[in-house]
Structure formats: structure tokens, C-alpha cells
Image (cartoon, rainbow, N blue to C red; front, side):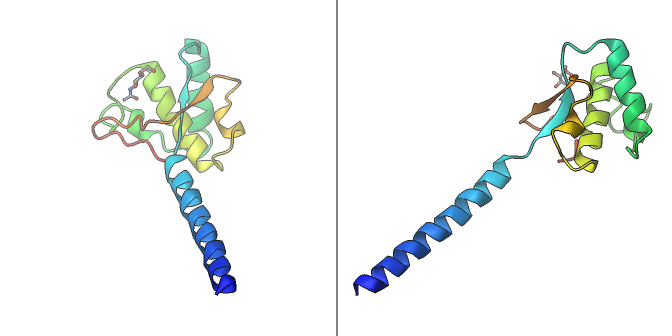
Length: 116
Ligand SMILES: *[C@@H]1O[C@H](CO)[C@@H](O)[C@H](O)[C@H]1NC(C)=O
């Protein structure tokens, strides 16, 4: 009897930690965006880097789904996030010489979907 209950206690703890890990994974979604302090030159540089490294930049072109809001910082954030998501989601993939930062809320807007 004592043995049984310790087995179920261990099982309960094990299953709880699986659940907690699962919830952690669900809530650890994050997006890479440009910092508000980045200069226009840095933002443009990040677009150039991202778009030359297998990021699909068509959404930020006129008539693309992420053209609006038509600002450099929004276009750059879209490219930086796409780069981050497709390059291993590592801290380094969102560094961009310290002009990248993480957003914990989805920056998607209307038909513009930021990958996660
Ligand atoms: C556009 O950029 C501004 C400034 O970073 C930000 O607050 C806003 O959420 C962005 N909008 C979208 C749709 O990404």
C-alpha cells in the first residue's frame, strides 16, 4: 500500500512536470523585432542582411501583406523576425549588432503574419 502510493506520487510529479514544461513551451513563443533606438541606417542594413539570407521579403514590398504599416521599423522587424525564425531561433539570430530585441506578444497585424 505504501509502495503503491509512492509510485503514484512519483507518477503525479512526473506528469505535472511534463505539463509544466509543455505550458512553458507554449508560453515561450517570441518574436524578434527592431529596437526603437536603432538608426535608420541600421534598420536598412538589417533588411539588406535578412533579404540576402533566405528571408522571403516579398511581404514588405508594395502590395505585400506586410507593406502596411509602411514604416522602415515595421518592415525591418518583419524581416528580422523571419530571419530569426528561420535561423535556429537563437539569441544570436536576433542580435543584429544589438539592434534586435524580443517581443512576447505577437506583432502580427491584419493580414501581416509574423512567424513564430
Ligand atoms: C510597428 O512599429 C511600431 C514601433 O516599433 C510598433 O509599436 C508596432 O507594433 C509595429 N506594428 C506592427 C504591425 O508590427
